[in-house]
Length: 339
Ligand code: PHE
Image (cartoon, rainbow, N blue to C red; front, side, top):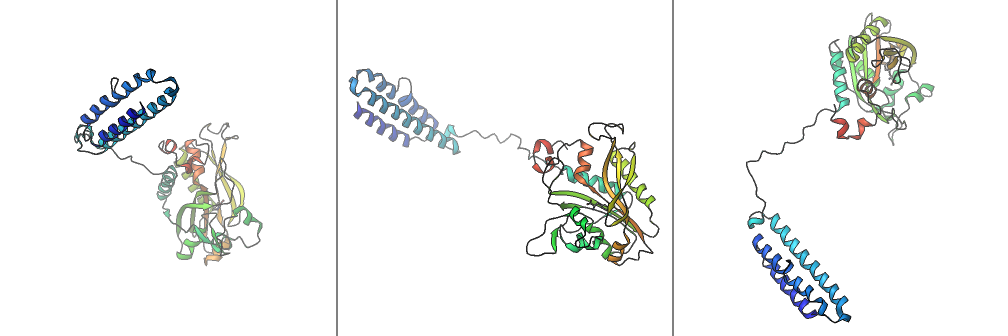
């Protein structure tokens, strides 16, 4: 019996080598693996093998079946993979329509930036950009934040190793300085971009997020202009019924400083689980500090201006009811495709 097993193995292996078409392969399957095939035949004779040898012979038979089946599958695959090898080759229907490439779209944060840009463009603001890797001077000194001033902590940031005055900007206010260094008033700009802070990541914090800065400088710009422009913006972005209010605040580069709050669009200012009081703080703002004008060589007796800064993620979260800032950065299509 063992000798026959060996012979069967050799024959099957030889036969497999000669197979070039699906028909031949099928004939092989019937001959060796089929119900009345040669393997079955040997299997049927197992009871007549002396009891002592039976377990060993049974094991060899099973092994042989596995080997022949594996060989069969291997040839089947290689026939299917090669076009032109007869009936086993997949039929290619050249009249089928092509596969449509998946079309993406702009990231929700970029959509939010675009929308805010458009609103300010209607009020004559043009867009300015500044570098993400910045000099300490633009992030701090020129913005009236001297070394060792405690308010540096609020804007603490990542320093670039190897240079003690180079950092990843922690606010887009840097662009105020860069624009004013290069241009004379009147100035009306907004500056969108990434900022970086060593915050621990949670539902509302990220070590990188986006801000949009705004700056308007001219002769005779007042706090009234600040309120008017930002109120128009809030109503354009959140809806015409939106109420605004300004609360006193502090920033080293504006004096006086304020935070603008908008009435919650969910409860219309009545107070709900999202807003608590009915009001939601959306941005910091104020009149440009005379020291900032001095840093860029403007005459603070001649010019006045206002500046503001808002978080883009926060604006998008409020408008679309996104509960967690991390959704914006995980690149999960189930989230992104909703925008
Ligand atoms: N740069 C401030 C911040 O990051 C926001 C701000 C900008 C406040 C401009 C006033 C004027 O929090």
